[in-house]
Image 1 (spheres, one colour):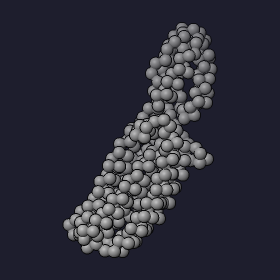
Image 2 (cartoon, rainbow, N blue to C red):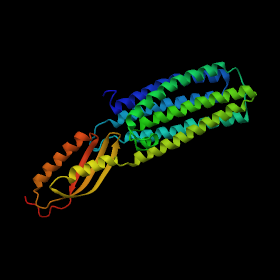
Image 3 (cartoon, rainbow, N blue to C red):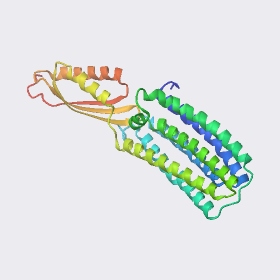
Image 4 (cartoon, rainbow, N blue to C red):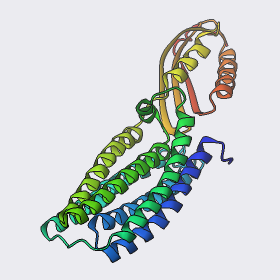
Length: 310
């Protein structure tokens, strides 16, 4: 699969984020060990969680790409939505939870500020690496969102890795800035509690991001309809046929980022032979899939053919 395809771009974004986070995590833990900074330790946990999240999303993409079988006739596309929800839970429980715990611990028992030179260097390098990952995610999402606004595009997106990495990297950039401010205030005021406050603030940012991601992943896991443009295209392609008198319900359901189930109730002219209806349905499938390749299963249910001739 080419890197220019939506799935290929999504995978490229995940690998870029994974490479950045693994290197950053090691540097942050080394800096935390030398400086004793709670905010830096929190940022280390944050990078580890982000790395695990990217691995889970890559695993989810691989699992979701499996072909349909007897037990799963509609395929495995929605498994990606399950792993996306797991990622949101991990961010909340591990990233936000550990950050809050470390922050409260350092508020109760603040450590005296130590030389922060290494911490500042690590933060600067981390911002550069995270910034590169963030730009990759931003370009990919900008390309996919079209003319939609950012929040509208996130709400309508059916490809969780595309917006999860963007959210994670944005939270990571904010966390690095907060960590730097916390370390600086600790040294300026000679009060280690600022470090703990920064850690709690980072945890709050992660908590908000986790809740937003969980909400979006939950909607996809439950099942979301296709875009109105696709539904209207299906209705129009069927309604324009002379054999059709009325198009009833058009039910769509995303089975994955690029797989849509479609079911339609259609009233046919009573005198149309069954064989002609079968040919028409086959022609409609070919026509729709040529313009909308994401259509997977397409079922058309005839509603009225009581007077049909053999």
